[in-house]
Length: 239
Image (tube, rainbow, N blue to C red; front, top):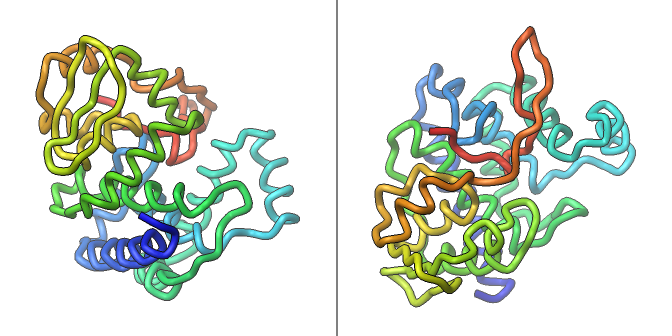
């Protein structure tokens, strides 16, 4: 997918996510997403914020509040945005900015593609909602995640595994442990989510199930409980 095609998909998927969110009951907005420590409304706010990035001065202030942790900063900005707006307002933001091509300074359109696709599943899957992912877009997103390092470290984490998509032409990795399945399920695996493992097959599935999904989480104390400090991009489901 070229740049123009990618941006068109991003716009479509923001609108589709808004359509999904429009169907949620009030209590579902506060349900846990696949991102540990993030509610559905927090993930929705995270996606809505991507085309309306804060200014440099605001980010510096937020960075100080987050004690220099990018993951805590990302989490806290999203939560505050979610808490300051109604669910209707968040859906409206997604629609109003769906076609925007503004980018946060630290990312690019390829990252926004996988971010939008995967976070939609972070909302849909725990709510048991069907939310199909475009296969060509998922293939482009998988290729991007496989070749990047932080925050997923997919090649390092899945060393020794060979991944094969069954619905599009895409393979990655090498080794004795083969895993096959639809590209959207493989994308979730690449980004550290375990929610789609039941849609994958092959001798590598039991082996990958036994592996940690990412780096150990740091926590902070909130109300006497240890809470994760990662961003939505660095979170995955706990099973």
